[in-house]
Image (tube, rainbow, N blue to C red; front, top):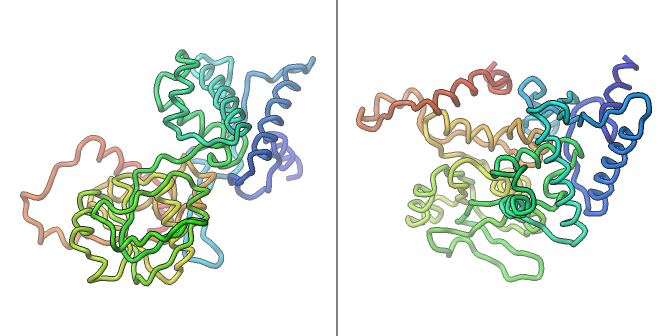
Length: 346
């Protein structure tokens, strides 16, 4: 047992709590210090005369085999978590070599950004890296995966790395927002597009929130959100409407989490399509995602399904049905094999 614990600590750059792994929120100096430790460990391995280990980076594994579902002790919120199992980026494998290098290049860029006291969006980071190193970063996916690798290596949030969330989300309804030293924003008097949610999580965390709503309703489709906003649903049913315009981005999940923490007695309902994608969106709000398992607990809340059920289908005209596309079938298979879905069902 002691040997196993020693192996876990040795495999990690920053030790282990022997239970589950999470991403820390760090100040810029703390984040830069972790990057420096990573570089020093790399150089120490490079200088080792006996068994140089420069070819491998130990990253917290973001796989279904390394995830589980944990429940809060004092709440009914459950979230995905990752345990201390590691995957490796190897410089000596052709399939891993570029990914190995990308980790260091993203870390270098983040180190500079933090040193300048700045923040960047993931898209902006992509253009910077594409300009400097087009051989390694030919698409946004390369940057996104490298960021997740850096989070897995340093075990800190992407916000701690100076990376802002790209937000598509908006909210409207019985809610007043107030930024520090700024005027209040009354979301009940806005137009149908609502109030755009910023991608700056630091700013979102400082917002003062006031509401006399009874419900929070998360709407999958922007068109439905705008229709409900145009009808001023929140004046008939005192509520806050929020949308991420599809699959939820981090900022939309974060503000929803903040609302749930600020108004713990306000139930949250999700109006999503009755299809695999709709259920996947609901699960992301409710449990988080495996790819962000190190941070999931910071963005989850107890969301309840509002909408169609299987028993309602006889009431729907056949003309409204659509055949599942290959992507839908793929999502459905993934959901059916998901451990945390099975755990909640059983």
